[in-house]
Length: 85
Image (cartoon, rainbow, N blue to C red; front, side, top):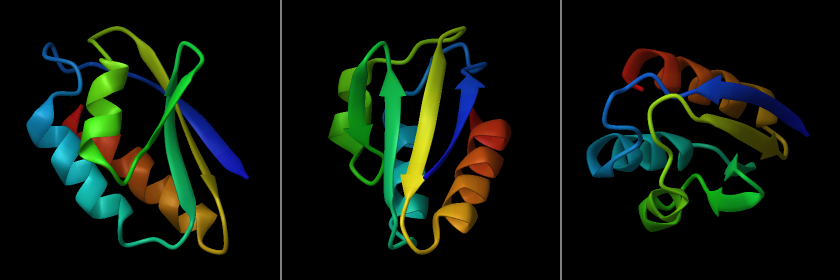
């Protein structure tokens, strides 16, 4: 398992459009990938789950990946979040 923390910088937080793009990107990987905030967890491959976490600007999320391509999944998630949120 690999993970990293990311503090949301987008003033709108993680809203529908970027959540959809992140989910689409994460579906390229076989690993289980989750987004975690305040003890709650959501599948990073599903938009609705991420939206239920309601991550806002300034809040920190933890991205976890576990599986055969976890290293690539973590790097892709880190790059996406840094560029888009």
